[in-house]
Image 1 (tube, rainbow, N blue to C red):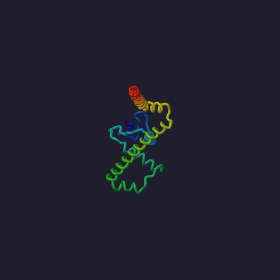
Image 2 (cartoon, helix red, strand yellow; image 1 turned 90 degrees about the horizontal axis):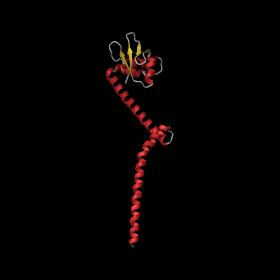
Image 3 (cartoon, rainbow, N blue to C red; image 1 turned 60 degrees about the horizontal axis):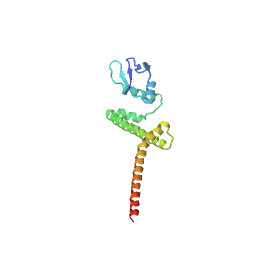
Length: 163
């Protein structure tokens, strides 16, 4: 669920969960911390999220914390909506790929560290739970093989006794 920020006509931003006014820098920090932010006009309820996020990016540009290439910005303005839609689709696709890859890497690392015995007690308990059905299956298989071996030994003894 999105973290709701209300924007008032005086341009102040109000964090409804924390019940306090926030700055663009604080919203940027929230986003970097992984929070999903939704900015709405306090009077009309209009979604101002994109405008506010663009404002954060522009403030970063002004402070030279990031630099978008001027030719890229020229193209973005020159080609209007078609270019913006292309950039949005491309960025969305790229971000989805990054998130997917990160999740896969996390899964692989957890699995690898668990196998290496680096996981804490919770990881070892999870591994034990995963291994228990396999161990039970192997025990049943060994018991069945022992029973079959015992049966074959009995048949062999009977044949020896018949001779």
